[in-house]
View: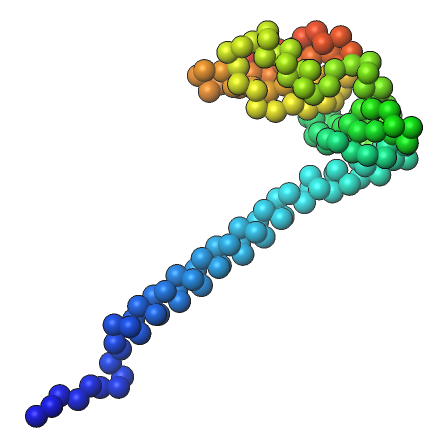
Length: 172
């Protein structure tokens, strides 16, 4: 007597296919959720950048944007570097309120690279993580953030114009 297969009994192939389909659906769900999370979390930065560009175009005739910075100390500032309609390299610092926009000729101050270089020379033990341009106590400054060998954060504020250290916070 031959044993007949029950048509409702799943075969190994069907089981493997179901597991693969389940994994594919789970991975797609993770990708979609991650994408939504990323887009929602980056929306404030994108909106701030767009608004800063509009203000800089209006007040500084900014034509070409090289970098956007979000700087927060006592107050929040959005800064842009780039070229104006005359082809001059400029830096524009905009308070969060949008009032008292500061426009500076880049040749009268440090670039991001020059500010990072000054910190690298003065503090060779620090691994530089990021730089931001903003205002501190009514002067334009570069904030350079770095980590020391103990993975502690160090913050250096450099004068945009002179390159001197205005404030240093180490070991955070």
